[in-house]
Length: 421
Image (cartoon, rainbow, N blue to C red; front, top):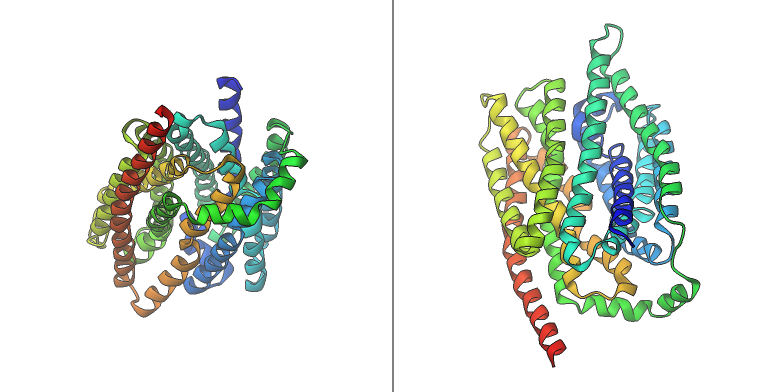
């Protein structure tokens, strides 16, 4: 496949990844308004995200199974269309049980049928020495798409709030409609833009017969386990950034528009942080760069615990943007460690599912943990403990990333020596 064709297909995958998730994670920029519009508490919202995370975790391995058998074009197009259509139900501000149902379905449309298909597509498009670059471009590109969409959404929200007869709830509904339309309209673009071919029936049957054996091979892969734990600690740091909106507005007293502006500005760090991390990983070593990012991000969360209502907006913006740059850098590089885990191509989808099952476990327990912390320690103390928890795990992840780098280096050395023999 020519470089132009590979990069063209990568661009389409990036667009799909950037368009499907913003609607699900609307709380990142509008948490307080979301609570008011739906008439739910912060604990109820976090419990909803725990439900979403549980669906993700339960479907990661089946998602990998699907990615080994069906065309990414079909899986991604379905996911985009279904996610957007659910948004049109969401915009009616239904009862709590309906919101829970919507998020359960979103867990299926953005997890089961989408996630592993996207990751495997990029893994196969990238050559061995391009994994960091391609995954950096994936996460950075997705971030660019999300930042562009978020900027438009914020303009819609701010413009609506300036109108005398429009409430914050009505402004939020307009944002939901915008995101829903984008997701639905991107479905045919992916359907016609990505190649039609998928795995052959013979390959599919063979894989099905070897499913148990393949899972056994993955379970014995030490590099894969270490990579999964590093991913877990990094994703835990990233998950903590979802609370920035509530922290800045609820504890530091910033207005909804200012908070939205700060958190949207953070989204613009994603294309920068992820792309730089990806290219740096190919040059300096993925595990070494990952360790530096994990440790630095942990230190910034400790700095965040020292802020107060007297802290200036400029300093808060600097802290938030730095955390965004580092955590998006982590996300931009940790999937590149999969290439050095020595996983058979025929089971790569399963490996992605297994890695996601462990690495994205914070989707389940982070919302539950934060909700209980905020309830037991109301106010700023709850947020401080939450950020401290994330920082400790980030330091552990940095140490394990160095161990992973040493282990992969030994594997590469043995492989090279065997080849020479």
